[in-house]
Length: 194
Image (tube, rainbow, N blue to C red):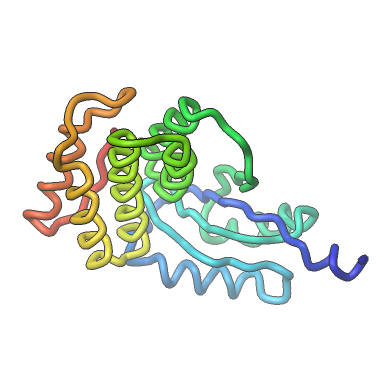
């Protein structure tokens, strides 16, 4: 029992302040973060770069989180870390959270929040949320410098959003579609807000 407990790690989203990094730097930052934490019991599974943050998806024993954060400060100043746990959250709150995360370029967390809301929906609303999830998922790929995948996923998102319009909560669906079309037409990826 004791050895099993030692193996259990908690998952965190670690956000470092971004000073000069771009999505093209994601793979190097991921490699550097793994080098910095060599010898620790930690899994750094992914790195995403936004204009505001460097986002690292990590698993570490909770009692080693502070040491991990200290080691990562050579990449960037710690902004915050968020413990990722399964929670039952009401659909309205999940959508509000998703909007907040999207507007702060935290697209993976947006995807997760909207997916929780999607599970609570039916019909046209479910398809609309699925389209928004795909937009967020596409931008996750952009933050990892996977632009071809980003464009492909945006194409799938547009198919889901094609017949949708108006406002959903405080999301201007027509604007999301217009920005998505603009990215696909120009093949130049940029972030935008809901």
